[in-house]
Image (cartoon, rainbow over all chains, first blue to last red; front, side):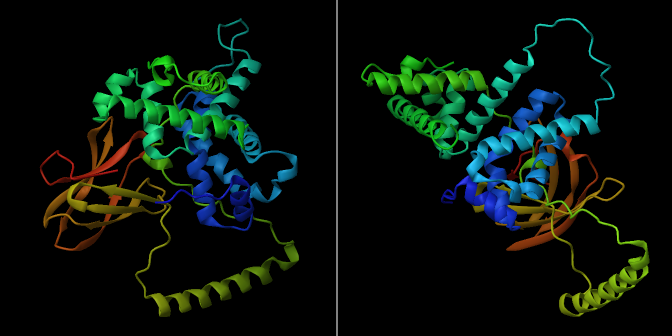
Length: 182
Length: 184
């Protein structure tokens, strides 16, 4: 299937008019970013999945409020997701967790956590723009623990092809991160 | 993990190398994106519009008008579509297998007891009896029923009386076997 060339701005405009396929496409592009952020903030998988659903319900309701002159869609969606996740935490506090203790922990502070959230958001969103074979190569290269030779053997591809495609994928990601998502 | 120098080689322009090194740093910082569970494979159904109550003095009129409209629409729907229609699915899961076997699993609104009514459309499987299973960590976890397939396309209603969030996929196996012939 050919990739959908519509921009996020165009999709949001259509969603504001109630266009369900546009909503599906935006969901495809951002679902993993949203779930990733929810998992980092909430921890519990079931509640994170609920928060991800809440986020997209919120996108559906508020797409008409997106104003392209005030920022990029990725930033707007990030804010919608963050708010939906925080609202969800307030509405459905984890009953198994008591109030946090008043002691310093080794966890990152709010500023560091926000920075990590934003980087992950952009990178995961950019990954969705890659063709499937390149995305798999990047995911294998970075998160499977395999070397390039092991990936080549695993996929049954020549080592040179794996390197060339992975390099091309990194270039595409760089373009994407410097462009609309930057 | 893959060594970046192994990917980039030595012949890259310094500016391009710097660009790709930056992406490399971001990828390492971001960590892997999560896999979407079956329950999140598709966008959620758009939420219903918010309810705005009528002023009290119009409430009876509005209810009466709504009842009349509902009866009229039901009548039209009954005449046009017959009595056996279903609502729109809230999730659709695509499955595929060897020899171009495919399936589409439509999940409908879960009921108050936790049943997910489903409709499975299968094509390309040899005639026989099969089972639909939910999987966890790649293993058969809970069955969603047995069905028979004839040559051509078969459509069959099934039910999943489980919380789908605790599973990570669907498979179809020949009845009594554990080797999937269709997977998500």
